Structures are given as structure tokens and as C-alpha cells.
Image (cartoon, rainbow, N blue to C red):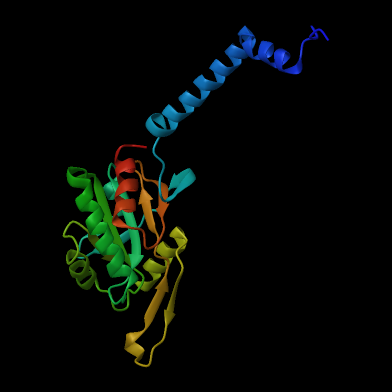
Length: 220
């Protein structure tokens, strides 16, 4: 029997494989390839750095205050316009969160190098009964002598914490003079124009704090 001249399935597949890619298909593949390449470049090289903390959108004017600093002088938040300001609420008898956070802030400032001159840390007491201006001033100086500690009367501090949306609660102990204060431990970062810009969460590392402050100093 003579061999069949009918094309087989394998012959048809071979011919299909040998067909050149159409111009349209090539254009689509090239476009997809360029898009993927552009996304890779943007993601790894051009994407603006993001904040670790929560960006306040839209930013709003940070509430001003009039309090007494450790050296006895009267200070206002507006005195530091033109600098990045970090406001942290705490108290000198705090057993853990406050000293830990102040230590992380100190390390973060060291990481900023010369840029640290453009940042002012202000520690505000939620325990004005025990924290005199002198006491809070000496307390923050143990961490960094550029930090400012400030306080006021109970009524003054109550107004400041309300303005900033800070929570605090006194917790009695066996010794009435030894009470604890539960309080908000976030860092409030205010930009050079006095706008509330970023809120850094409690227990953030020095690296993360420095990262966000570096972006703030750069005007991001």
C-alpha cells in the first residue's frame, strides 16, 4: 500500500510552531515587558519612601500650648516653628514605657547626625502633681540635654492632653504617693509649619523613629 499523502497532526503542529510571531503579538509582549520593567524600576529605585508611622491626612494645625520648661522659662509650641517637633506625653515616675521611649529617641537623634539640630523633642508630663519643672527638666537631661521637659498646673496639662486627644488615667497603689499613670505613648510629629503630620506608634525602634524624622526633616 502506498504511503498516505494526507498531512498528519504532527506535521500541522510543526508548521504552526514554525510560523513567525505576528507583529501584533510581538507588540503586546513588548509592551507588557516594558511595563513590568518600569514597575520594577519604580518599586526599587523611584518609589517615594513611606513613613513607618501613621501619616495624618489632611494635616492640621497642632494645638499650641503655654507651659513651664525645666529651666523655669515659659515655652510655647509655636516657639519651635521652623523645626520638626516631636511631642511625647509621659511622667518621670514611669517604670517602663517613658524611659524606654526616651532612650529610643536619644538613639534616633544620634542616627540623624547633624540633622538632629533640626528636630526638637518635647516631653510633657501627665503627672503635674509630682513633676515640677525642675524635676522633669533634670529627668529628660539624663537622656539628652537637647530634650525639653515641660509641665504646668493640672488644669493646663488637662487642656493640653484634651487638645492632643491623649488618654491618661491615674491608678492607685498601696502607697497613695506611688500611683501609676496609664497614658497614650505615641509620638506626635509636627512639621516645620506647625502642622500635625505623623503619629509614630508606641514602642517603635530607634531605627523606625529616625527613618520618619529623616523624612520629615527632608520635607516629605
